[in-house]
Amino acid sequence: MMLSRVADSLFWLGRYVERAENLARMVEVTRQDALETFNRDTKDAVWKPVVYATSLEEELTDEQKVELDRDAAYYIALSPLNPRSIAACVALARENARTVRDQLSEEMWLELNAIHLFLSSKAAHERYRNSPESLFRQIIRFSIIFQGLSQSTIRHDEGWHFSRLGRFIERADKTSRILDTLTFSEGKPSVFSLLAVLRSCSAFTAFRAQYRNNTSLKNVTSFLFFSPDFPRSIRFCLRRINDTLLEISGTQQGTFSNEAERITGSTLATVNFTQVSQLLSDGLHDGIDHLQVKLNEIGQHIFETYVLLPSAIREAVRTEGLQSGSFQSQQ
Image (cartoon, rainbow, N blue to C red; front, side, top):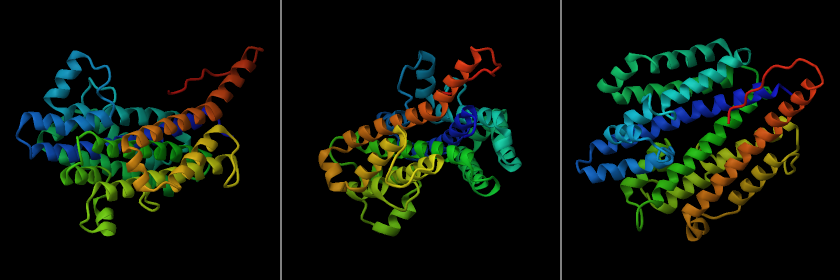
């Protein structure tokens, strides 16, 4: 088993890169929609789901609230006042990558370092003012290239699997949060809202290929929650999380060796044997809330199984007089 600090850094590297991409997709789609809205109250309603999906509504200072209200897209993308901005996610991804340089290819490091230096420069702020859509597309393009390099330029060993775990947990979480924005409005969501959700998940083309022009809440939910072959659906992500956990521990399919595997397998089985009509009947928001609780539990038990326990063991050894480096975990 690799060192727990390495596994933890690679896990969060995968999460932060995926998070930056998802934020860029959501902000770009919402920004375009907001430009078509001239009523101030309607614009606020357009941005409200994104603020929820990115957890930005929690504990904001007065200064942060003013900047978020003035330009939500800038606040989410580049604002130094926002510790959860896209630029902050890329910076955290780079910091995690820096501590595990030997686990990455040169090409991966160069791509990550280049986007970090760009987003922390004045050029990024000028790009946002002059051509914001090109800024968001550059961030999305970086993530796709970085993940492609991860797939093709490094060994598919334990480190690669931990990075993959972080990516798919983050993707499942963001897809569920974006889908949950459809529960904000009273009554059935509009076709406009349904299309915005599909575009935020880069699912518009794939959805149309399967459902043609039949854009309904039931079909959108079915596609983003239950599709077995769309890479951003919740079911697809859960299956990848389950397979990756079993690959790391060497456990056979259908069994489990730790709590993270048990919860993942149980959650995947529930999704596999749930129909979209049942999910909507029981309440889409409640179903998504339950899923997000499970995703948080999976992440916590991955930490406890592969990061916290080895750390505790090293600390116990160190008290007996052996040297041990300091351990830092990223919560």
